[in-house]
Length: 244
Image (cartoon, rainbow, N blue to C red; front, side, top):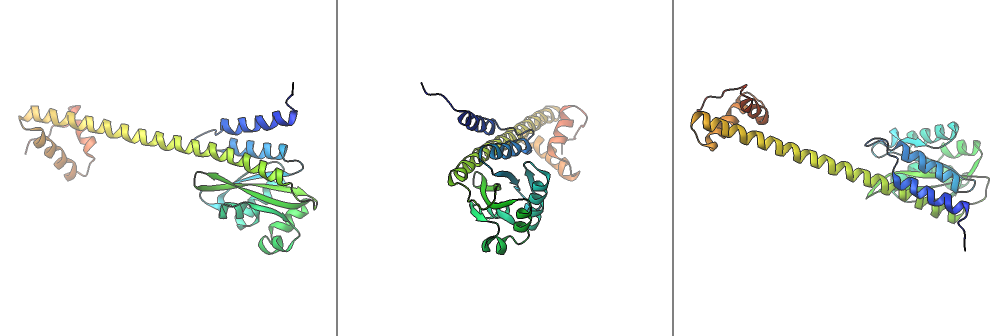
């Protein structure tokens, strides 16, 4: 009988954690970002993993990972619009394994590359964090020395990032659905109150419900008030509108 290795168990747990969606509050994915960074660092060999999350304004990005110096660099890079994370977030495409002392890094990341090298890293790559059709950020992988990052690690890192993106998209769709349900509920409540007010005025003044609605609408417009508020006051007998 085959057994499950510790590395396989860690990998399975990583996907469970990301699918579980530690989104602490609506629109606050800090727990999910921390889980992605932690599992990336744990599973991807000697790589350090940092998550950049910037759904709206890249300059005001959230970062997650370990090591204050590395996080400080990630925040600075977001402000510069530089580095592999900012590039992957901007283009929506993976940034391949890149030597931080090479021509491409010196040309495209003139501030990021030397600071990353000063922290002991020689290679960098980034994997876009997608939620639906939007790119919200990236998982940045940094490797020590000059040894290229393993292709398998990059593929695994993208799988982890995609799992986090699915969770973000799920949460976003749930919020949108809840917001729509709330709007429909409010609209239904408003409609019921207006219908009640029409019936109240029609009975009180012996007019048709269409005439009662015109009375309600006229009063709301002339006093620059919401029709629902006027209707509620009529139903609660706080407002007595005369028939035209």
